Length: 353
Ligand code: SF4
Ligand code: SF4
Image (cartoon, rainbow, N blue to C red; front, top):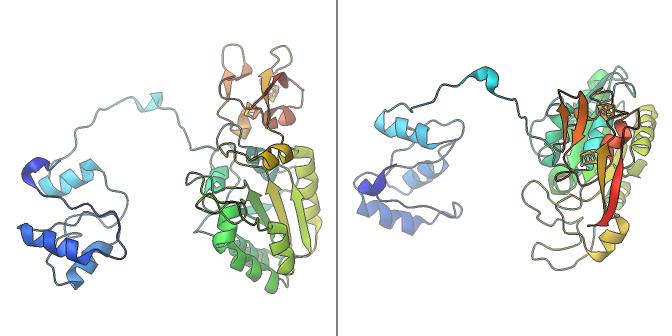
């Protein structure tokens, strides 16, 4: 955008600030502009070093930056856009991966036949995606690890009028969710909040970092696996159950139990992330056989129940009015087969993943 009319200093590290590098760069240029997103962190720090610079005078302090915004801020030019037919655009909300086994859990959580008035406090990470259409299993999400504390506070307000459920991933739970659970347990009087820890044995959304529940250090060395169940029990949680999201009958039973239980509940929903490279023990524990599922067109009535679990591998054929499973994308979590009341979806063939 600025081409060779400007000099650039790209920082790979913002804390600790490479002060001398910035000072040396500033001495070589006529005007120093700071291009950073949202708040003026670098700009303020650089000014504190006694170096003149310009940042938020030109650039917005909200939202992400892109070339059009930066170009417009510096050159006053409006971006050229192509006007298209808005009706042709298909809404594509972000979704859980094809074969994310946790999708079935969200479908059950949203199922009003289990409980009518349920408020769901979500958290960040993969499981924030359970709140997007068509799963819609999230009413609010504020910040990392807030879900258990929100659920606890909201449950106190709602009393028995409404169930409040918190969903959080395993690494988020470990990171800062445990204090939130302590809040839930320690102040549990009149709070029956339900905490669901969706344990995919890895930090999924930020590209597969290990965490204290995954059995490896960040450097990939084998280490102690910290048990979520043991942590919950050690904190004083009495109502703790672990369930596989591949078994939706069991998930329904467990949610029913949680809704009826008096006092705080923790449900650990355990199945590895579909992108995780399983070690030998995990391959045995979590059956890694790959089963493709297909729709039997003679049985399918096009009721859309399977479509509504939001698996990217399933689509609806408008002409034939049936569901279709993309065999390249399906990895066989079986959630669609379990929600089809007509048994119109079944395994196709067995092969080893
Ligand atoms: S098509 Fe069905 S079995 Fe295949 S990944 Fe999607 S939900 Fe799972
Ligand atoms: S849930 Fe079953 S009957 Fe309904 S669209 Fe899907 S495959 Fe067809």
